[in-house]
Length: 357
Image (cartoon, rainbow, N blue to C red; front, side, top):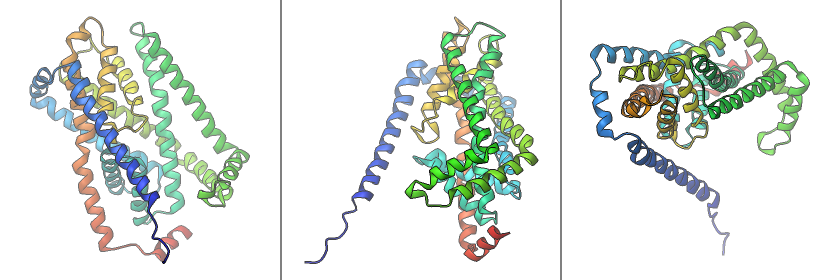
């Protein structure tokens, strides 16, 4: 009798985990949209606020939503010299599609953006540096935002102690993350220590100290040349997304007496924190519940009860512009890039020449 064929236990286990993640994500979305949101405000009461939008208001929302489609690409250009706006936009839309519809799509999106940038002739080291830098800058902005929002809101009215504590925790995490980033960039010894640690991990290969040192050196050079622009464009991208939420809330009739601009910013920053764990693709269900709950918590009582329906309407409108609108554009971008890559595949020799330049 010959050897038995492989059982494929590892593959079967991965498939089971994938299906369990999909099932869990579907369950979370079902609970959010079928139980939690309707218990907060009946959809029948929400719908009239969405259908009553004036044409000029809808046009203004579309313009701001369109700006949100381009804003993240500018920070990518700042972090990756040689990247063109058209390429950055196509890559951002395509990877946003993957992140928003595929379970665990963030990891796949990194692989996709790597392939796209390589296909367009960008060097491997520069791509790795841009992914790291934009990820760090994005995380630091998210961690700093809640504390800044609470400080702004505190100038207008007393703030709940729980929200203050949460904002302080976010501020502490920001300081720790910023200090760690500075230590890695400034201290060659600290960077070498991390490289030696990575060298000991069997799955990552060897040579990390030298690679880490080169990454550190190139990152310092990039930040010396483009650090201010990268920081400003990262903040602008987050600010534009907040502006979309603010205008959506105002469009459905929630005025500043109930939810000031500072209160909406506080809700925006805390609402996004609940999607830190990727329970569902694109935070579907989790983001909606988090934003609705945060907006209701920051609304001025007793009007908070009266504006439940428009708050839900504003959040759904916001998600339509920030989540749903990019999906067809991402599908078109991914289809275009796939067709172009198949028509003219990049050779390994050309890619090697790019890395050697």
